[in-house]
Amino acid sequence: MFYWLMKTVVLGPILRLIFRPWVTGVDNVPTEGPAILASNHLSFSDSIFLPLLLDRKVTFLAKADYFTGRGAKGRATALFFRLADQLPIDRGGGRASEAALNTGMRVLTKGDLLGIYPEGTRSPDGRLYRGKTGVARMALEGGVPVLPVVMVGTDKAQPIGHKLPKITRIGVRIGAPLDFSRYEGMEGDRFVLRSITDEIMYELMQLSGQEYVDVYAASMKERLAAAKRGRTVSLPGDPEDEGEGPGAEPELPADVDLSAVEDPTADIGPADARDDPEPPARAAG
Image (tube, rainbow, N blue to C red; front, side, top):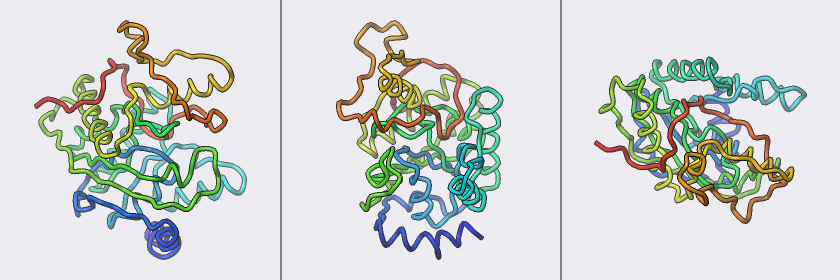
């Protein structure tokens, strides 16, 4: 009830009036049945504008920190997420990752739409980063389609480090559903999971026009935070780390504002097993 009240009566009309959001590809969203909405992640407000523009309810896996905040703001945020039926997940690995996957599967089993950010955290610089394979595993275990979703302009409306939003148009692009039924029963194969995840990231790259960086966003955040402190770190999974020669390490974009670097932790997305770095590409077959 709270979800629909906020969307249609309280918050939704105000956001529509101020930000004039637009959406394309909404016909790609099934009118019923489970599906995964795999989105790029530019801003906290991504989780607000995507559900706003869809007729069906979207349940996101949200980092547990949002449900345990202190002070007036923290308690208000926790109350909002609980009443909006969003689900907390632990960002740690191991058992926490397994629990996060199970939480997502419960949403799909009920026949609902599950929203997830394959990058695992917000992009620190507007580029698209390597996807985590949890989304692929859920797609195979649930036998559900994956819809690539691109948020447009949310990073400009709410830049990292800025509490007050800027007034600008927000957009959402929804791509055609991706069917991975050809991999049925192979959810335990990490190479299959990586192939599926790369296909999803390829579609996001095509839809968004973002530059792709073949490292995890959380690793880049660690590097940015270290640079801010005058230190250097090696990015796990860099091509250079895999013995492919020097000079392959991703460069920091010239316009990155190190003063706006947030805490290098993941927002959403169960961690996947260690796998070989590859650029996103369509899976064969």
